[in-house]
Length: 137
Image 1 (spheres, rainbow, N blue to C red):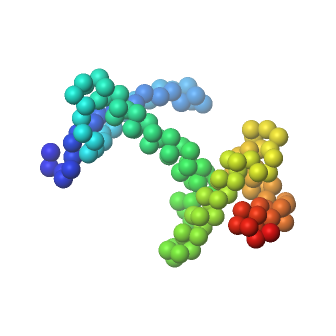
Image 2 (cartoon, helix red, strand yellow):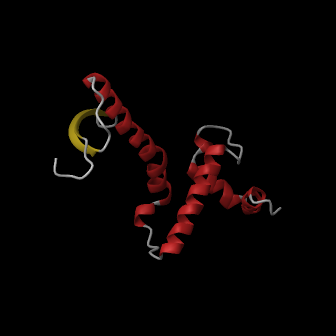
Image 3 (tube, rainbow, N blue to C red):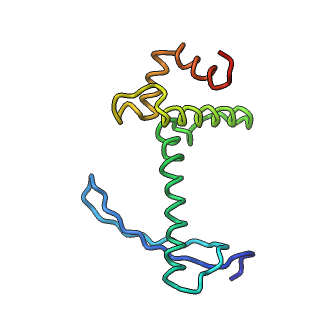
């Protein structure tokens, strides 16, 4: 196929409905994979589709949150160590928000932005969470 390690080339046709605009869209994307094919074509297609969907779970559950809550793509920090530290702190904040340590009363309050507002208003509590997590309290 011209690429080292390639076992399959996959075509995925996506159809989705944009709820706000009420419009449908179609898109065809291609993927190159080293995943060995399964002999049964139906099982192979289902397996490859599951892999593609799993990738979107990561994208929507992690990267989307980072982009929307932290505007991470436009972060001006370029020093490698500083960027790693910020990424670690963002991951920690997202983890803390998902764990609900700030005792949200509703699903809306369990979001990352809600945690930020809470931590900003209750800084000493937020510092105690971090200290307790490392056994420093």
